[in-house]
Amino acid sequence: MIVAATDAQARSVLGAMRLVAAPLSATDRATLQAAYRYVFRGAAELDVDALPDVGPSDLARALPDPDLAQHAARFLAVMALVDGAIEPAKIARVEAYAAALGVHGDYLRQLAEAAAGHLQWVAMDMMRQNVQSIPGLTWKADDVAAIFLPYRGARADAALAQRYEALGALPTGTFGRAFWAHYRQNGYPFPGAPDGLNEKFATPHDSTHVLSGYDTSPRGELLVSTFTAAMHRQAPMAGHILPVIFSWHLGIQLNDVAKSAVGAFDPAAFWLAWDRGAAATVDTFAAAWDFWSVVAEPLADLRRAYGMPPLEPGADATLPLLRA
Image 1 (tube, rainbow, N blue to C red):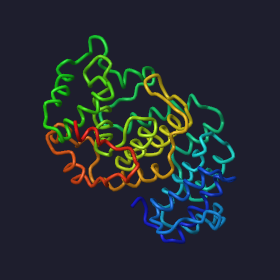
Image 2: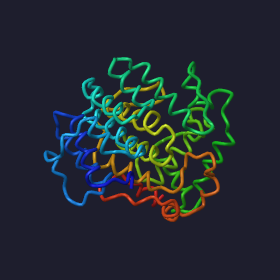
Image 3: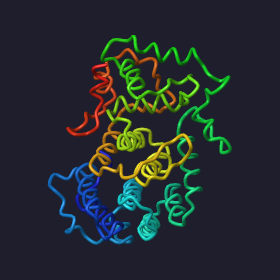
């Protein structure tokens, strides 16, 4: 469960989310209903119109627990963006709630700068936050591409690429074979190859794709990074969730390596991914996690051992990888 809250507290947060998004679109309503189901474990369908009007000071009184207040501010930030546009009025409401809650964070500044039209600064800060949240990566403001593409030219590492290629010889159903199939099916070069992504990023990221079950469509990329934010918990908003919403929902390309798309936010799948990531008991982005020590493990067993809940029907899945 993402957060522990009473029913009254849940309705207070959802009421504040409703006010941030007003006037409500169909996507806003679906987002509130999905948040009630996955974040707060609501048993019945939420009546969005019956939610209380909860202003900033009201929400602060309802949430004396600082941890719950932090989560509420994050949910409010997401709510300001679900319609796929940067709307200064909505962001100003988020800022008012965050101030009342006593919550500060880099993601709140990113929102404020975006509202002011400083998108180049926002993109650079999002990339910096993402890089600094990943063990083994070093931020280089003057050459961001080199962070993610370190094997070009004389820096190619054929032995490393071959080590990943050899995963294809593992038995069907193993994690390593599924990882290899993920690369083959998507046409990705392995780390070490000239156009391969940095192993420090690519291996935990693509391992999370395989383990979580999310594909590499814009929708899947948004979901796997949401899952990562809840699992890894290092700069979750500033370095993971907001960047992928900007990239895959608002269509803002953050750098020359990353891609972008419009409209990939799926309300139910988004909150489910956040909930599933929070349930994971192993962090594949942690410095201590050893990819090579588990490549021969059955994928299904590894998912269970890592506490990763199965996907619900209709969600992006990796069934082709299980057959690879």
